[in-house]
Image 1 (tube, one colour):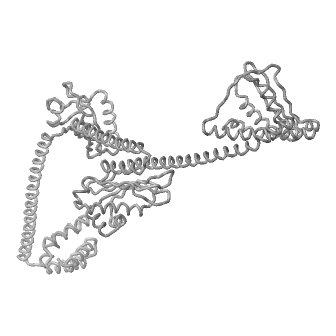
Image 2 (cartoon, helix red, strand yellow):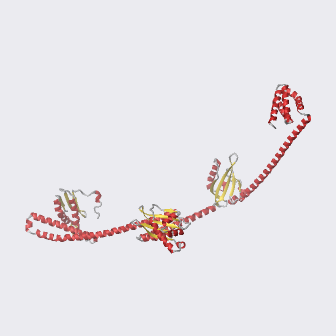
Image 3 (cartoon, one colour):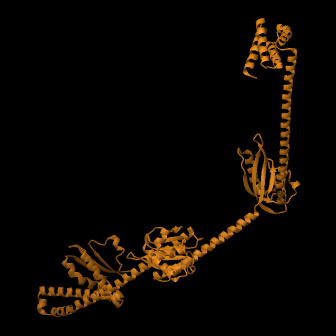
Length: 629
């Protein structure tokens, strides 16, 4: 229907409404004219009647309209169309509408049939899936259980019945908690309570011990998932029960195998360190020791081992090199193997100091170029196919003194952290051996120097003592002769001078004897002549020997002897030397007009000699070392 026809119908309805409202005959004729034009344009008669009835209904069925409606309607139709044409058009319009409705019914029937077919197919699919699910549910190797929120079993499969050693019908209605060991039930109850109270329920898994009813207890893994209804409330719980006893046994066996493997590796590493320690401690020739270390390492850790040491002059020397037995298979040519020995010597010249051991996971061409000295050696290394390396520095108090280099040409072998720690330990032991041997050699060298110096000193002291005693003997002999001459004894000056000459000559003679004693001590030939002596006489002789020295410094020398003899067994000469040294030091370190005293006394069963002075004394921090040689 066009817009023009629709506009005519709307105008018709509006004019007819005006008439019904009391606008008069002109409004009615206007409405008739508009309706006639609409019918002529193709608007349906039945549609026009419907529009007419709608206007009457909207008006509310006024009395005037009800009286005039039959007459006006017939007049309107008579003026618009002939009776035959009006009936024909009404019949045609009704027929069209019936056909349209019949088509709609047929279409709806087809849609309902198609929808019914889809429903039947969906139902069949659902039934097939249900049957498949039932079969899978019953034939599944793991146990499946459906329970309510409290754990009461609603549904279970055959695997659960077999696992619990029960008939399937006996499980329905029982609580899953009944099959859990008592000491685990409280824990499972708490888990169920958490499932009921959680806002967001996720799949949860536990491991519990299940009682099978015949005294058998097996570990079971419980996995549970919650299912919610349309309102979001907990509908049921779906459980997966899996016997994990086999898995636990396998894990235990695997753990035991791993522990055994680790223990075997640890034993092998301890064996390596023990053998290395034994080799390093067997000799003070660390050069040969490190060479044997290289052979030992190849049998445990690497395919190729190099040991380099930094000498005291800064040069780097290769002390050890060893290859695995597979070298003869990889390099049948002996000339190529000799070339590898030269590679090791060259590699020592390009070593860089490092503070910690490190692993080279992949040996690239640059690394091979540093290792090789000539193009032929580089080709040999490329043919050998080195894959990884481990560098362990020898550190002596933080100072780089060498390197142990481990190389591997096996594609499936890579150095691990455990290998690195073992190499570091081995490098520490080698470095300690190098340090100890070098220190020992330094001690031996210093000892030899000391022996030579001591021998030279002894020779010098012996010569000095001899040269001193030779001219002193005539001096002492003449002083004894002159002391008996009257002209000497009558002359006080000559007598005192002669006494001073004799005293100093005797002092020089004692010095010469002391030099000889030093020589005898260093040679282990000193002798002590023990005799029964009076210590008072030794004190008196010592004080008389140094009285002149004390008088020269204007010192008051006090000598107090024990009232009774102090008999003892000893060497009077050695004791006199000791006391004279003490008195000499006292006189030496006491200022003029001071006082030096020597006293002897008996204290219980001991004889005591004290030397005291008014000098500067001995510093407190030196008293503990006063008797050190």
